[in-house]
Length: 179
Image (cartoon, rainbow, N blue to C red; front, side, top):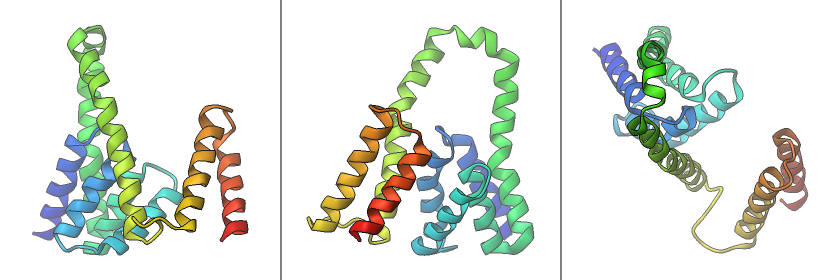
């Protein structure tokens, strides 16, 4: 019964989530914690691990959650369930791509989904930062420092077009020096 529930939950998440793995994280987190499968802290650890391993963060998270909940069989069921909707959707879209690609309604729908996907990613980042004590809602020198590192990273990436790996290394070095 638990395997069926894992399959259903991750199949639905895979079917209704747009914007890639990072946009799926808040949905997965909500489902996992609401069902009592993992705590927010445990899920955050899984997301951190999933982000460091090769592959989609959503697939890796689903696999790790499935493993935590029901062992190897849970990992297999969760992995299949979260990727199956994408495979089916891609097959259908590939068949009708040339007809749908130029459709104004389809172009407008995808254009409208962009801000939602962006907000889901921002929500996930803020939620995890608050849940793990990285960010608090009180103004402190740590908060100001973190915001300045964020702002500097954003400017380096978007304005100066510095490679993300270099920005990550620099942010880490600055964090070590400050904290």
